[in-house]
View 1 (cartoon, rainbow, N blue to C red):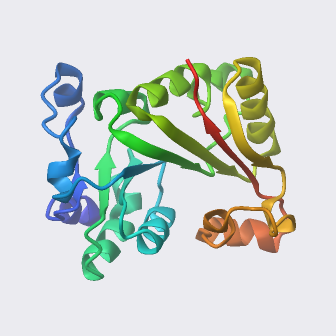
View 2: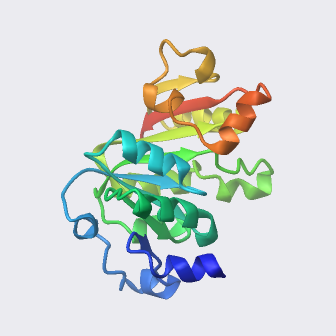
Length: 219
């Protein structure tokens, strides 16, 4: 509760009600440049957790704006607090359900989307909750600019394979894909292997392979 109360005082945290989003009253939709006070490219991290990846990417890319999205404000409290303490003006956090993402951003408002270590939702009955299923891809396509792309980084071989199968089946553009990026460091993008979360380090210590896909959505 203390973190929730503190989030309400943070200038870099946005917490619209579900009613405002669904009714179209969310004032930042299509106007996120006013939140950052510039017209720099906007990058989302969906399911950002503590915001570690959002902060790391923002630090490496000061000419871009980054928004961590998660429904659990107590998680991203740490990232939001750190961003304020370090005067990172290109970082924001949005508390909402990812299902509502295309009602929080306008068409063609986003340049990139990062999905980092999502719950793979392995059970068939949970397919609708996988963040790379067809319904979610259509939402991302709506808010992404024409040349925008999506990054998926996960320790789940299932999620990696499921996503690649869907992308191939629907003729989306796979820009880069590898099932073990840390054993392919010569070719893996620097932003993928140089940025790690707390849990990712734990996975690596246990010898788990980290997979990565970068793709464009074509509908």
